[in-house]
Length: 495
Image 1 (cartoon, rainbow, N blue to C red):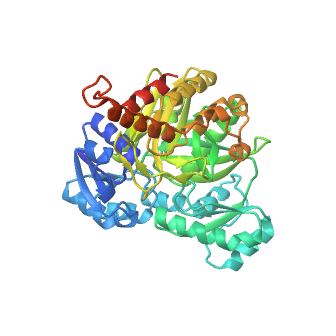
Image 2: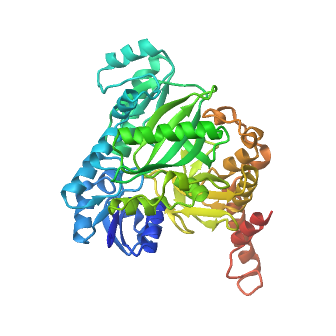
Image 3: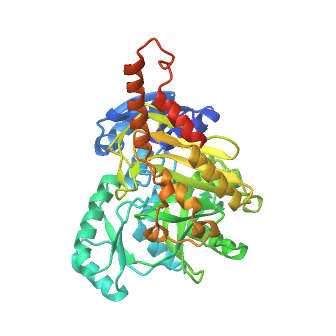
């Protein structure tokens, strides 16, 4: 059994891993960049060490420093979380060569499925349906032209390494191709340290349905059923749920069986996700394998009762799977809403800054995976995901109502967030009826009654506080330890 694990990540996912480590009596070692010195994961781990400057290339993507810290602190294993180096085969091999266990797929499987092009070739060979597109890497613009001539526009340019919507661009005509590839390469290099891009046919108005899988080192593999991730903006998921309202038992079994077939063909180990696109006729096409734990894993944990991070660690320790397929089942319905520090009124530009006021939702069926606190400074250097609000209920309608209630309680003042957008989606008739696809947000109109700006509320409350102090002085009842803007925040929470 591991005694100590280095967590090569930051934010809410680092904190999530720390908590499971603590439950398993495993010591956790965190790393932090300059700007993350006071982050929650830094404060929560058993040990924390400075890794470098705020830029990811000099901190969370610095393999040499990560390995050095792991070895100097007597760690037996490294958990990469998601993003950064989670799907980097070079890092996985360095860990192995340095005597450290990489808590993720074995390097050979990671090389195969982490490379989207290699995975497409493998899946095609076993007879699964794949989206038409490139089956090889190239840096020659004419090679892109040849593929497009065969499959036609629109196409989508994608990073061949990594995931999470990074490095993806829709290309509707030849004039957009060069810039889309260049922008995708830059984003992929920044996020994953690899700038390889490939293209495939863009399927219009599909549903995005994925299968969570677990596989041990003894040839055993199971799926933990599906998650629907069709509510996206710029190819980045913002709402996920399980079960999918689009699947019946027969289609669910077919997709689950296909996911296990793909996992076995790749000799995959540990946790991963096999992603599919589902068209209007209920045909499903292999999209990719995400060779890591995913942002939306709590949805699956709530409907199955499986702690996926715990299973990752146990598999990495050399244990067999704790579950058989026949013992697994979905119970109830779970929905996750990703809370991004972004401005939905300004093309979702990131909104870094200091959190002035924070009220977090709670109550029955509520789970909040968060990396923030009141007074925390959200940095400009990383993905703007700051927390994940997850709800569980006996059925989908109740889960939606519970999410509405939880979002109405969630108050983050000082930065822009997409909370009001998420609230509006929960009330949208199409979402309530399950009539969704990956283009859902393209024609979405925000209701006027949800357009209130939390930042303006904080500013007004702060002005009121200053005016009260100026008018009544320090020796009056109005001068209390609790600021007026906090009182206003609470009153809004109760509305």
